[in-house]
Length: 222
Image 1 (cartoon, rainbow, N blue to C red):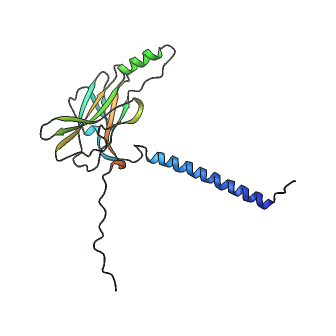
Image 2: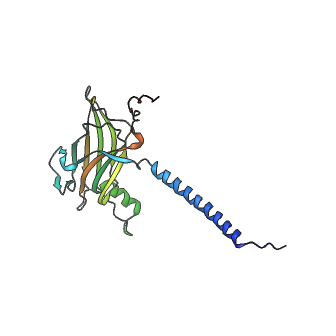
Image 3: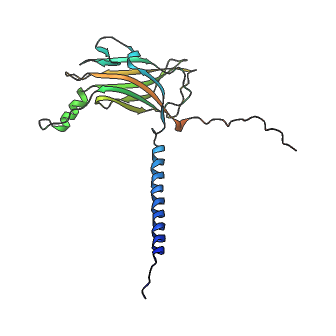
């Protein structure tokens, strides 16, 4: 027996299929948004930052200060000591360094790829930043975070994770500073520049807030 499907039935069927597909798309969107929100860096915010030109160099030899950056000239290594936070009531999770230099050139047919990579890694410029805690009682130093540049021909920012993610600096018991090392390459054009460092926190590690008190409730009316 041949069944005749009415136009109304077809429209109802298509409507149900459309609703099911919409629900699937909404589910995918919710999952994607959840993954983005729970990424360790999704809720990052700045806690403290200092320009490299405000740091104190160990020696003025081999460095140039221009355009808001400290540059180690070819064949030189420069060490900078930068002031650290004086009041932070939130946990530090990462340290960032903004720099320019140390990029690896593209391999050519005349260069063996592995050998060139080893040479470039050895001779190219590098910048590092280290967040250090100093005990007021003993003077002992503890490295809390560190980052090393990956290399870039443009201004770039790289980040390093703290060893104790979620710990809050104790300003009452410790001093804090950041040590930056800027090492240039050995050949012309391999200068290394550093612009700034930044301490970063994440709202995932914020301490829980006590519940708000709205005061005593008004007396009930009889």
